[in-house]
Image (cartoon, rainbow, N blue to C red; front, side):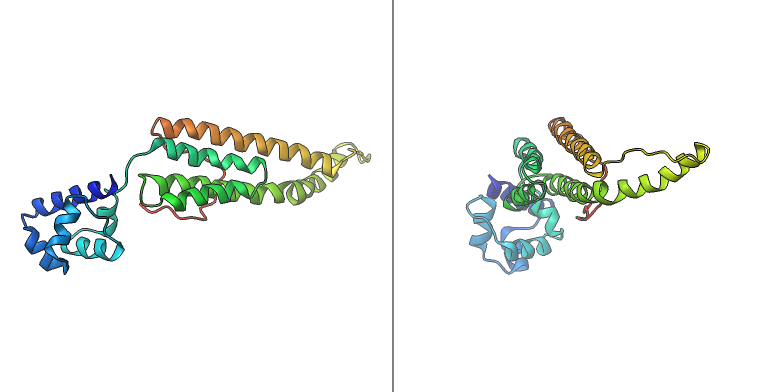
Length: 208
């Protein structure tokens, strides 16, 4: 299927430019037989061959290759849902989607965009998972407590702060938020809508 999509794309671009297979073979440095086999979907050209074809057809390699990708909404949903493995161990929410992405990279439409958004969110989540309960929350509390004591006419207020109990509450809320985002965005993939993950630091850059 992938080979046929590329073959159709090459043939279409060649016809648009009104050039023969012989001319394309000469311009790309490939044999006529190779051009014929590609257009018939009998062979899958490697990266170097695709590069030569793109130059000869005056298009970018990405523009040529994106036509080899097929739509597979089910796989995209599975990739998104694979982030749920964070439930067993936080880092798995990054590793499993990454492995699925690499295994199908350039073969499925929109896989780069979906994978990068999921992975960016999970990386951000893991960082916050360890930083918020252990550092940010106690720091904020230490700043707020003196202010509340001043408001209370200088009388010391003992809030009975239990660091680890509070950390567990935050972790539970973060787990619920992560699960909620993953499930909601799975429905958005099904409906062909843009994903909404927040917060998300762009560790992996989106390419337009």
